[in-house]
Amino acid sequence: MRSAGFLSERQRRLAWVGFLLAAFQAPAAAQLIDDASWLFAVVVALLVAAVIIADDTQRRRPTTE
Image (cartoon, rainbow, N blue to C red):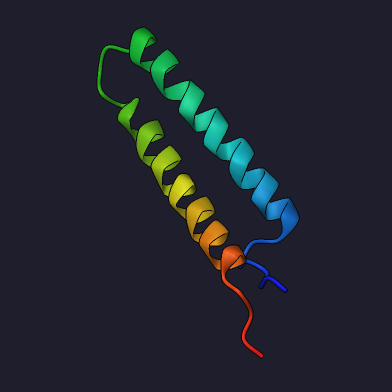
């Protein structure tokens, strides 16, 4: 039996949506905006990706009985 991650299924879906939105918004903003404020979207996408990866790692860990 696998252990559950720290994110619920709903939170996990929202994290993926947030990641995809931030990942697609960054290149679009980079082309439209002259300053480097689009880097914020890249940082947000990386942080959300780190949370998703950490949740994946915890889900793949076998439970100890």
